[in-house]
Image 1 (cartoon, helix red, strand yellow):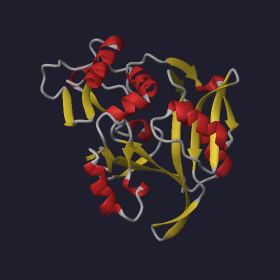
Image 2 (cartoon, rainbow, N blue to C red; image 1 turned 180 degrees about the vertical axis):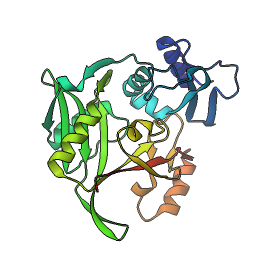
Image 3 (cartoon, rainbow, N blue to C red; image 1 turned 180 degrees about the horizontal axis):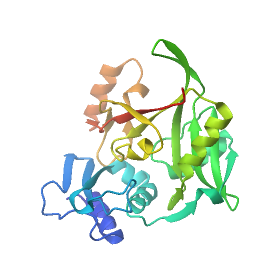
Length: 264
């Protein structure tokens, strides 16, 4: 086991010694890439959303990448804490919905989300005691053809809470505010299968449309930097050869789940 992988296992054991399956079980830890660690965790019921009826017989799989462990370690630690219910809970009814500026959203996402900060047309947050504790970002409307009709569809681009915190009911409150103010025909979003099975979104009225294929990118062990193909440009073949010569490998994540919330 590599050092960074051992650090993750030790951190999980620190927050919930019984939360990881017996390490002697072959399927407890699944190394599907040298730069990634896939872990099968026990579902302890109330810590997961939604709770499972038979915790002892179920599990949740998460996938943690080496580059993210070193570049976003506090965010990953917060996510692990959340899985075991060890975050500070804030109730959405005690928060206030606010509109946010692009710099405010960028700053919050940079320190609380795994993916790169991204802009959007509509940016909302929840504040508690004048501190920002959650954000949700939406795209502008796009005309989508469905069932012979044209719908105004929006994408939920980002949603995350403040590290170390869980805003109970926060997702619902922000969604309701967006729907009330913008009146979308539908809302589309993606969830990362490295971390989620989409059940939280299903419980909020979303429908699963499809599972998108795994996305590939270039990663170099120890470099802690990933390069996505869409950022390379037109000379993909040449750049691919150069990256591989420099020690980068082509690796794949587990893809996404595409979901849709219909208003009409």
